[in-house]
Length: 262
Image 1 (cartoon, rainbow, N blue to C red):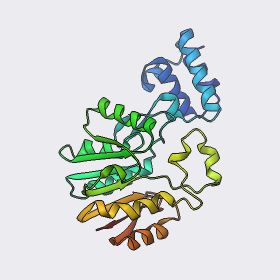
Image 2 (image 1 turned 30 degrees about the vertical axis):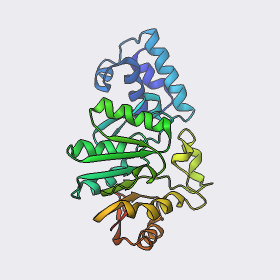
Image 3 (image 1 turned 60 degrees about the vertical axis):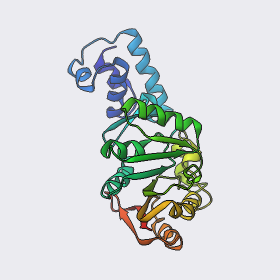
């Protein structure tokens, strides 16, 4: 099988086929595409065919490749962690627009938020909390691979923070409602990182209630939520005593992040 034949026979999106073939060969996409007539070694062909079969069964490309780009960083991912989404980069942008020397990331998953913030604020103290031991192991490995020193803690939301207070707290918690029709398309990702009660707000309720006690005066709590949840989340932050509560839209104009100041 040649490169051209492999790309034509994949039965997946052309961009995905190129990524999978590049991974199977160990070369860049550009190098692979530069020689469409090149014959693939049997072991490369076998790897590619296996990857395509996994993709056709619905497995996300990031899990097949074992990594995902987020805010310019390559992060290892596996089914123990949610795959970082591009829309979550808005949360990083908003966090970096603030002056902070210490930040806590609640529900860090693969470490995307914590590592992006540490990468851009090397002098800051970054604490990352995760309830899943499997996810925390992935985050720790990403920190080592990137050479970024984050204080990784195992536990639920604010519990591992003790009596500490921070200049900023960020979170991308689960916010999908149980039974949501979109969950079928996310079957390969960990449900505990996606689903949060009948209305999708259980985790955000917990965070809103507990996080203000861990903010210094003037510090912000900023968190991601789902489409159409912004009004409810603003209400939760206001009832928790936070001020200047507001929501920010993503590139599609959908309110995606809400925050408030202590």
